[in-house]
Image (cartoon, rainbow, N blue to C red; front, top):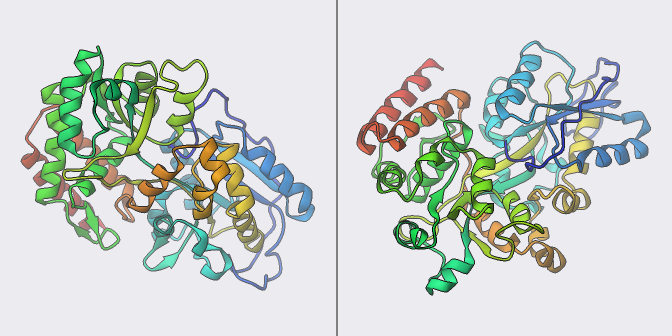
Length: 424
């Protein structure tokens, strides 16, 4: 789960939950009913950067009657999701505001675990437009974007300059440089996140969309993966392994393993999230000052990233939903969003921050990231997203391990996704 930047801080776990009070009210609504305001809990995956507790402490000082207890779950996306769902299925009011991966919004909304929100309560027009789509399901707003993310292609600027080359804009250019240039400098060519977990779903979805295809349409109601675009995407990934410019060990890498390989000077190209920029540019990094970042390539030009990040939602069993909506509005306001970037090293959702001259000087990748976000797409929307993702992972793992052809992989995935759809 990459809304939290990988760093070296251990988990901070809230020790005490505030006493629960029964409440009524409409999340995001104006006039609050009796019990709609009061103390809350905010549940999130582990905040590895340490920026969130001070924000909560400041809120608590200003809102003593609506204090927030921060509950941090494991950093692992699967474990966090499982613990949240366990509480929500049980009808527990333990959590009021949930910081959820953008890919979970459809599932949580379809299950009625989170409550719909009123659009007018939040400054959605100030957000980067694609991120708002990650917070909707069936035409309604069920969450508010909090942190966004889009994949970038990191490259060794020093090596390409030495070779007189521009960074690749197409798959063909990427493959040629990874295959020919990288070995001349003792490097492997290209890596993403290819271990069978959520990261592989992201990488595969990006490849399919970059080729002009999709996996699901119509909020998950229609399987669309059986296409020439998907076959080209799977062929691109499998071809990299077969031709050697994707190293075999990369099939076991997640975000951090791939980041370390690039940062230690072992890779010419890396697909990863924006958090890598700060680590790779840090003092003492072997590649500091020697790398750049550009949008992901596609078959004929710039490709398409998948939107990452997280959304803030109000539990259907929230004790104090009006206070919960106010907290979400606060955390997605301009002041806090600026701190999300400067203190948390996380990409904000508000568009104006990407054009702030002072921020661009401090974070030179912001214009590239803005471009990537504006052209990005959500992961497949489905009430059964967990099953969809597992199917994508299994099929793409096999085709990248060269256990089948791209044609066979696409046909198999189409069958499995159709079966998942019928189960609903």
